[in-house]
Length: 453
Image (cartoon, rainbow, N blue to C red; front, top):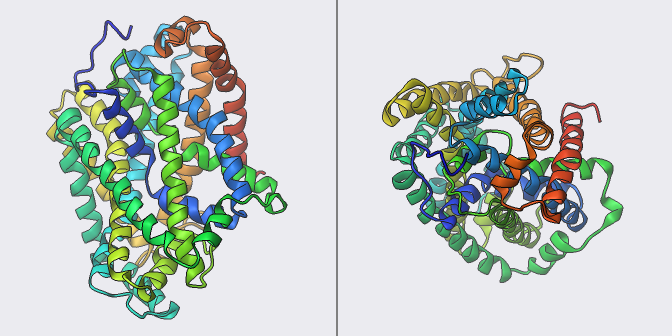
């Protein structure tokens, strides 16, 4: 089917373009913001080892599966699942998997854009010296004052959403591909610069030991489940992005090889973020397990007191903003592809409609930190509710269903054809992992995040 079908959106011009785009989708706030603090909270090196194992056994097989589904049909996730369900003679309800992926992408973008707006705002704060000589109380006041102002948050949310749409509206080759061609090397370059500074600090070797020296006494069953969850979420699986990017992939490109490269690049960025952040934390006597506040409350303390903190603070928050932008364009692309393919919209009209929906939903997240902070449903604010719905329910269910559909429903000759592995040991290993290991692991993650385990 791959050779007979063409996508109306255009193809990635090369394997490198797809790798940069898919890595950009995977590399986001989760790598630079979340990975360091969950590593810190779970004992460092031992957690990293478990995480790497989970990437190999869960992340890569699922990425191969989702890419394969998209390339098979050359369609958006919704049409992909409708076509493949019919092709396999399966229950028609499987097509709801495509709908869930597209919906998850828009919902995640709605709050992702708000948080990404914070990183853009903090570039300006670092540039103007807001953190200079600030103590913990002063940094907290800066953050609390910032999120308490809905108008200010709406401005940065809108700015980030506009930047996302300005890229996506230009299409696959002139928009998505050109953006990642410049943004991803810039991201890596800036991170190497920051690493160079981190290596010069007194806390570098302490940070190195913390990140890579295993202490299995600190590894709990919850740590293992957290590592499994992070390995799944970090690759942007279950939200349609990988599927739609796969639909733009040439049949000549090896899905297996590119999936390994993308997973390795994504993991490299996460570890690099840890190598940048932990030395700064230890050098300045801060706590590596300070949770989500590590980025917006803890690190500004370090930037405010270190030599060259103004410059490196600006660089760090630019890195954060770039990582968020490469992910946000992937989050909205499935919805835009569907509007163009199924509704006959121009790409411009599709961008406006999908962008407005995500932007409007994002207002709920903005207000969750100020005027709606006391308004709760099921003991959660609007932001917490959407975050819980997507991260804890929609994505694990989506990942589980992708594994089951690829391993049990789709005809083996079709998956062999797309993966181009033949009936080799490698194909049998992939099939084993995607049939048994990945679904079981994702199901355990699901039970963990909903509080059963």
